Amino acid sequence: MIKGKTKSGFEFEVSEDAIQDMYLLEEIAQVDENPLSVTHILTRLLGDEQKKRLYKHVENEQGHALVEDVMFEFGEIMNASAELKNS
Image 1 (tube, one colour):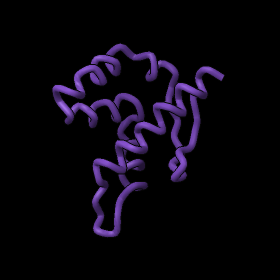
Image 2: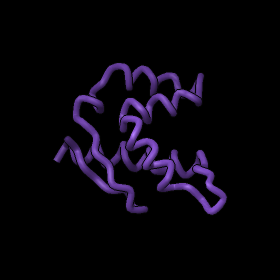
Image 3: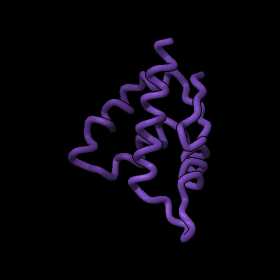
Image 4: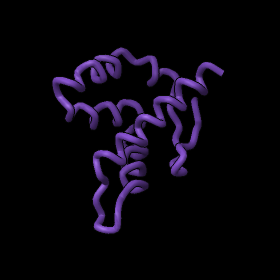
């Protein structure tokens, strides 16, 4: 299990199997053709509960989890997971 925290303070856990998952890789490969596949990527990587926590973490005063904010956190999670896995 890979545990980490983004710069904004979101704490996450990602299984090493999830990082190496071929289904995840296929979803990532299709993002350019289907940007909505990001929701599937987040679910495969984090699971439903952590994904909900992530959305809540980035939620603004109006109750919206903006795409830009979620994607920024996703990038940090991917980078941190790769770094932690290699250490």
